[in-house]
Image (cartoon, rainbow, N blue to C red; front, side, top):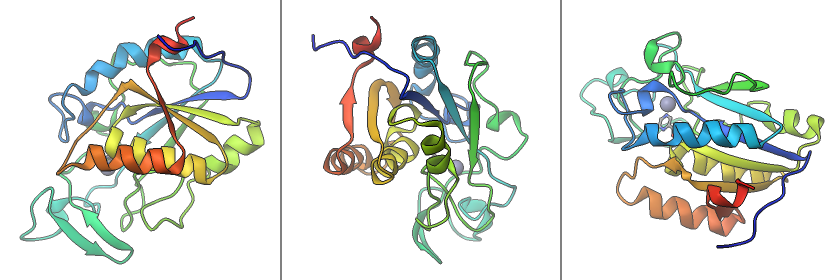
Length: 213
Ligand code: VGL
Ligand code: ZN
């Protein structure tokens, strides 16, 4: 087993999109997605600071296949900002599907960053929307709070966790993905590609046992 990691005041846990629609029975269910809930809860008690993200789309969002007649979920279209995967309607603002998993027990979370609320732009990353220019404000928030290292858990490893981790590094933070506390959609090899991208960007990977001390 590798060395335990000591957490300090500069560390923050970012819990990505642990919402009903990404869990079994949800509109865009990630296999075993709810398996991250007990781990996220336990890690939440290990960290002094916890932040959450919430995918938060208006009805008819352009990332929904239903907004494009003749198109089906998981096809790709060209959006104004480039390639965009089409998804089943999911995480519609105010719906049960957009709510956090009922067993997620992170009441102490200090911030909920909502993303994907602009009708024309999807947002995988917690830092920048899919046009890669529109900021969510998270980078500024972390800087002003003095955080330097971001640990990521949640859904999905190959989309929101992936883009958030890469952008965290791009914004000057250390990014650490806690792999056993994440689950992937894995569309056409997207998980392997995401891992490679993250590694190339300088993201580190650990398992949660290194934080259990
Ligand atoms: C996500 C696809 C669409 C995610 C969100 O949370 O990874 N993936 N919207
Ligand atoms: Zn979404």
